[in-house]
Length: 68
Image 1: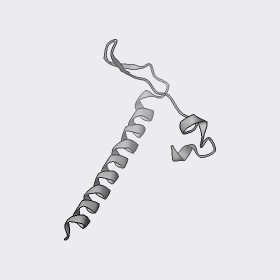
Image 2: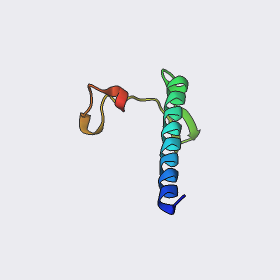
Image 3: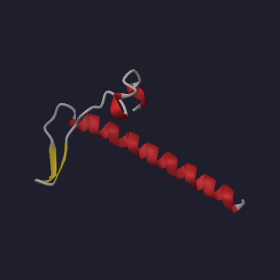
Image 4: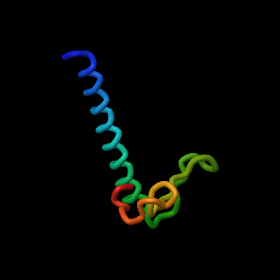
């Protein structure tokens, strides 16, 4: 394979992995944190709290929450 094609395949593979990790963490957060108290990982510094966003940036996309 030529170098540009390899770079393109690596780029797409990275994009797929990042998307899959993003979806997996969202599923975990919804299953573990929804309706529960925040989880303190490092007290006073880092905690996980479940919240939702009804739209994208500046409230755009409220009619398509599945997109975000």
